Length: 232
Length: 255
Image: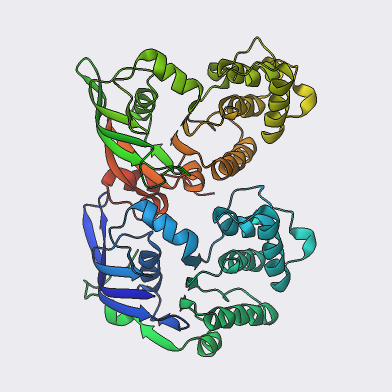
């Protein structure tokens, strides 16, 4: 479902003397349906950069990214948007929402965008919020004032509310307690069981061992660069 | 069902000059049904000029604008005005430019319906009540004049007046400019819901990158009358390619 071939990435800092920073070269990766692949490598080696290129918010310098048969590299924005709406889910580390929108609507939004009726979308959102132990009294409030762990669970609920065929997970268990971590791992295993192709970054080694079928070390995709260079 | 695979608005090589000075030049893009296009740039970048050219508020010196297969620039003025009353809408930065301040809120909403041939008073009033509710203005304010409203309420009333006829293409010029931050969030939430539920195509001009991040699918960055970069909104903001966009993004204050 995810096919990455010979992918490369550079950042050009026009306002800092046009410095060109190569951050990735020759990246290859594939994820099949029902499989969970973990990205590993030291901090700054390009795990998030690779994930962001697959999601489409970083532009590759070269190479190919195919998701469910669609070429993402160089795709028109509306193709990427359509793919994100029905196929490609993403749980980032940060919750970015409009202030004042109730949590239940934040979680239901991916379904509403797919045309699911308000009540059905809300029922599925509530079900996930309940599983992820977000207290019912918080459902009608905006998540902007929630704790870090609560915001992360809202993000996860949003990522799992629609059965996306492809899921990108950036540290989905990072700031969770043991109980909620179990819930998230169960959601991941359920997604695998229904055939989702999952690519994840997990610093939590035990979580990684429990859900990942394979690991890909991105250090192998890091181009040689002058000492002292730090990826953006 | 309308054909979603054809652009609702197609623009090529658009140019507007003021004597020797460039208003905007070499602007081209396709807007598809249901898409929200954000246009950003600082004051004087040509973004508002572009918007008013697209909406036909001023003439252009070169290029083409095609709406739903029709050549907008070659269109008779009466035909363009009919479009502006029915299938298009224009939300001004200052609500008082888009409202009639001397008549009631209900009349402001009803007027656009009457302009499209509605004559039944009861139906027009019912539609006005419905729309005031959708933009969260209490029904008991229907007979008040907009002069008695706060800035945020005036802006919501302007949106109701524009959307009551069920337009397909909406032009917005800094719709959240000049509003308190808390009022902005409420307005953005409202706009996002309306865009989704009505399947609106929107072109929104703003200098506020946070607004486009939350509202726009795609972004065009303008500088000195030219488009310097365009693409998926989060891609342009997270991985800007052009020097000017990099400067713009890195200049935003973090809170």
